[in-house]
Image 1 (tube, rainbow, N blue to C red):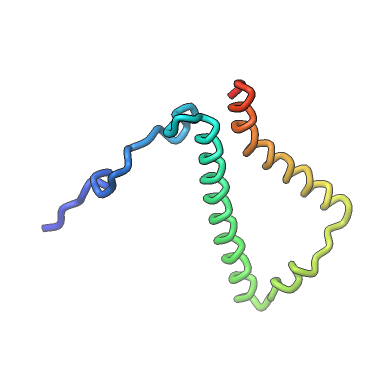
Image 2: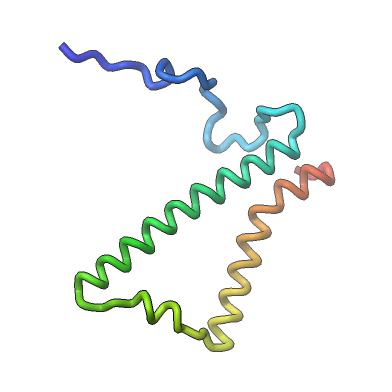
Length: 107
C-alpha cells in the first residue's frame, strides 16, 4: 500500500504566503525582502526563458533549420531595437518598482 506524504511535511520550511500576497516579509528588513523577491523572480523567469529558447532551437533544428548561428549574427533594425529597448525598460521598471517603493516608503 502506497501512502502519500504531505509535501509540506517533507521540508522544514514554513508554508509561506499566498502567491499574490506581496506584502508578507520573511526578513527583518522589507527592502532586503524585496531584493530577494526580485532575485527569485528573475531567476525563475530566466530559467523558463532558457528552457523555451532551447526547446525552440531544438524544434527548428529537427526541421532542418539551424538558427543558432543566425541568432548570433542578427542585427536588429532601428525599429526592432527601439521596441526591444522599450520592453527592456518595462521589465526593469517592473522588477525595480517594489524595491524603490520600499526605499521611499511607497511600496
